[in-house]
Length: 285
Image (cartoon, rainbow, N blue to C red):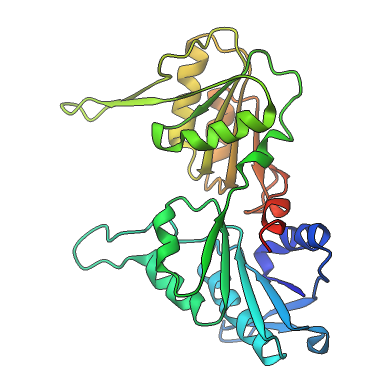
């Protein structure tokens, strides 16, 4: 049975459809003092394996995940698989300063206490997998991003924000079946602190461009990249990401920079979540 956290209800429904597993009904409540409570509404229906689905986009979502794991065990599940479509704190894979925690390690250890196995989708830092104390694997859902792209892209160029993320752009390009791949090059003026972004060696003029990343958070770097493409004569510019966090005014930043459309998966449920990452996860269950 699939048991969804409150932030992953659409993803859990898509996963149930992709796997044929029943989707359990979960209630979400809050006590007067602010403490959370989740409740499996039909605990008798929980079978031997429970799949807890939790996009941990907030501290509350992390706690819901732990409560769901415990509720599933209380209901009699012999095996618990925890699916993290998006793993919060996953970018904090090392201490940023003296006296600071390795936050992804702290949350990974907590999640490990209530589960037998973990699947997470396109972690920003692969090193976080090592922090879990149960078998853990990453699912690559980047290929799903090719599905919502326009079918008539003109000589498309798939760009990653840096060389380290070019594998995501390559995955989307291969799934789309046309175009070429390149990455942005960032240069910093250490006297002024200014950062300039160029598109590497690829020709841009009169081509449709898809800027691909694992996550768009504030949109600041992405919007600067889009402006550089517009200035070099790109035709239509799209952005695609696995995790559409889009915090604050990120959508406005991208729109004013000249992006045609933003595409994301449902690992974080947003209006731009036009395709589901669930089929990729279903193959690993």
